[in-house]
Image (cartoon, rainbow, N blue to C red; front, side, top):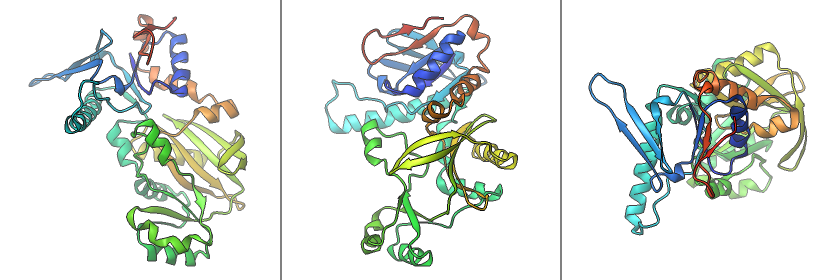
Length: 338
């Protein structure tokens, strides 16, 4: 059985669910917001025996030993039951439930996409940069700092031709949906007015990078060892408008697979820039990067590759299991058509 950890509204999860159901592969979609109000998780262990456990959701009992793969799509965090009103009790419940349930999934000996949460957390921007450099990627000059004077010196060194973005350390995606949307900040050019507000970075580190002359912006989705690359043909402000499949040089393709593996991941979307002189410059890797938009615009079968990866260790259960999904409203559980 494949365990899909996702919010109730998640188009990418919906798409892969349909592919799994069409193949007759067993899956369970679960949102952490169900826990602990309408779901229970129990783990048991003793000397010399592997950890065993059960998940009971909406009255249906699932053996965690049956989970062959986990796809972590950033579900909502655990929700405090309605009857708990005390502030400290709410905070304690959220904290304990979140850490327990994430730890519980990591006890399972199964495949993960993109990786267990602790591996995703370690794959932050600084770790990415070190890995990329060691693999031979070109990198733009970069400063990450909350020191106003360091920013001003970097700005002067590159004659103001720099861009900025927030530093999230690779952790983005675990916040409640509304908070995540509020925190979303696009990469933007540093204007001639920004040095006048240098003091504003004092309380939070910011990423500054020298502007890289570009012929094309590229995005590369890596699923296991499969690589899907696309080039963006035009942008409208902060919104990318059109893209098409792109053929990476074999050496660059191997580097993309290698950096994902080196970071302990099984999936990522990598941002590259193709320069006018033909260099492929590494900008950033997103362990939970969006692939559905790339697939819709290019036809690249990324969803099918995700389905292949998840189902690879679940072929036996595919014979006998249907799919289950817990809905936000309506029936508590729905058995998918085989």
